[in-house]
Image (cartoon, rainbow over all chains, first blue to last red; front, top):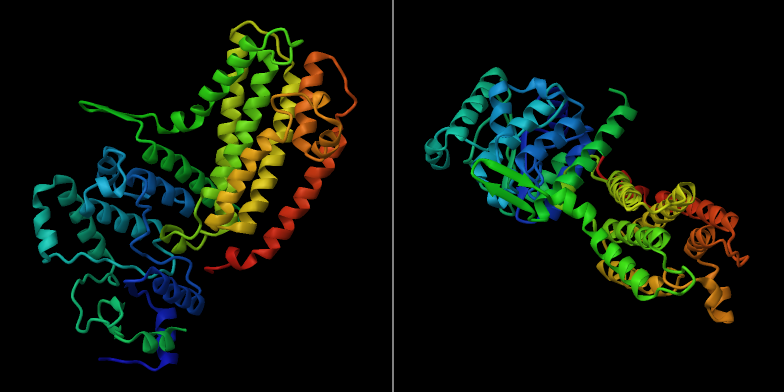
Length: 195
Length: 263
């Protein structure tokens, strides 16, 4: 495992665009870690499973983030816009989960592009979940858009498997595409590096 | 983008979210072939009017001959203002701040969420008020518009500051939220919504006059009936609102940790 000294690690975080994903079994711990990352790096937003509010529809979530980020819907592809605008206004539990996640990711990436932000993309091309999507035309179209985004941006990293699974956490990652910065499987160790 | 624009954008987006939640939680959708219509926002906004109109109609018909005490042209507004107040307080208190969606948002703090929720509720209250005015007009009943507008603004001012203070004091504490809901229900009977202050027993009357809502309701009633009991003091209401406004500032300072919790 490539472990960097704390100072170098923080410098790297501040000077590079990296991918961070924090998801634990306890949301309170998530928040603790996220707070630590935000405080140490002065980052305003981080992608989480709750980037989209599960109680409202994809369309409403999309509009919510466009307004709150102060961006025009024009920055999104026409094809993407036409897909989500025609979706029924259903909350997450009644919506296709893959479609939900895809739109959340694309919205997150586009809405905050240009800011110094940590991004997370959890869908690898070769995962069984991804392959099972072939019957859904909307998801196929959206997956192509995700691919396109990933090709345009060299810092995007796709993964669903880790070298080491964390003891207390589902996943703990600090990634760049070309350079693997670190992966921590111990909460105390990770916290000492981040805070 | 300057910080003012950012703040207004975030509050605007939270208002949109509130209306979206009304659509998704109300289950008021009709789906027919390719047509999908959701009445969630309309239902959430105007459904309280059903009980307001029903009660006002029952009182105006059932208690005729009481010297115009329950004339529908103003009694419906007294009751509507009360519903607006209790709805604003109860829904703001019920709005959870500590949910995962907000935890991961830099602006998911109690100040922005409360302001957005208050503005949403005020928009709904205004819609209900305007709709009722149009309805009364359409029935050919004469109303005193300026009196009603003054009453509406005073009640809204009270509702906003009162609910803001309670939200900042109790945050998401379910115990205090339940207690406040009970208190609001009790306040309905401890004010002069149904009966005028003039017929209240003397010891109770002096206590009730501490309640600013009593003064606002009495102001509406006296303006319509033309009978002045000498109890109305809108200056008291004004000073009470000023006092609540100072209270809002103090509770905001008290909860700075929740406002700057993420960044």
